[in-house]
Length: 383
Ligand code: FNR
Image (tube, rainbow, N blue to C red; front, side, top):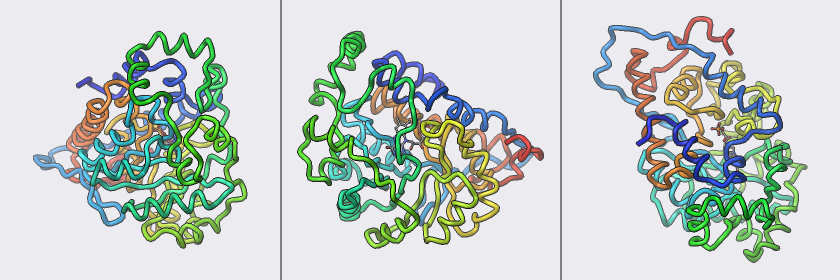
């Protein structure tokens, strides 16, 4: 096992073709949003307490009635098949083995049915809504029938943020064979062999399946070019409720006003997120808005947060500020791209061990007891 998440990132960078690593790692435009997400955690300091009995620590928390090993969820990311064959199954199995839920993206590259068959773990569905609402309705129906527990509507991606690296690399799905791509791939032969073994470029199989579109490159290109439903508004929550029995979350909230609307329109929770700094570059870091959102609606909604979790300490900071849990975006993917199933397991174990170490060094024996007293007194000024 490597020492830290950043070591898996470094290995992923070496092992992936440039276009795939940049897609995984990069942020929108000049990358300042991504940097701000990371900096927010760096700036926040703890208030460690001493001479408290920490001979045992309990990292578990309960989320939507399910007990999990620590306050984290393996978050939804699209196109995971770019990094390793059977990527979704691999992430789902590793999450289950680590005692965490796994959220599958609408843009996932394995069928919901295949992931369900691969694990008995807690699965969530992340929804993007296309103009033809029947696609999302079909996906909800399929996930519900497969026993997925939680639905998460992502609302910050009406259009894709401008990602300069993808433009530079001419990266688009389906992959187009350009001389640059051929060079990039040829210099990563092991990646290339793995991709060929899985049958070539990954496919957006769930979207294609629910849209009843044949899984061909051309059909997917047509599907991708169909825009998101940009007319989506708060009535989406009632619409989702009519198709979904479990908890409904809104992912991509960044203000008190919107978290209050989420409450008013009947969501069970919100994920404060700027999509890992991949959408609107100058959006605030979700951690910065967390205290105000918790003050406003924290007793009525479950507040989750994501963006920039690279250490177990970061999970402790988010929890101390009132988040019920964090979503992990890039961190498990660095492990996946570096060494496949073992890499994902390593990353989740590292985060868990770092989180438990932080609890002990803070003098807080249980994750449930983490609160603002675990943070330095000036924490609001530091955000
Ligand atoms: C994402 N994210 C994302 N979110 C979502 O709701 N649906 C999706 O399909 C994707 N796809 C996706 C791909 C990749 C490569 C990344 C890195 C991210 C956003 C993701 O769920 C999460 O909000 C951020 O990744 C959190 O930030 P960190 O942990 O990556 O810093």
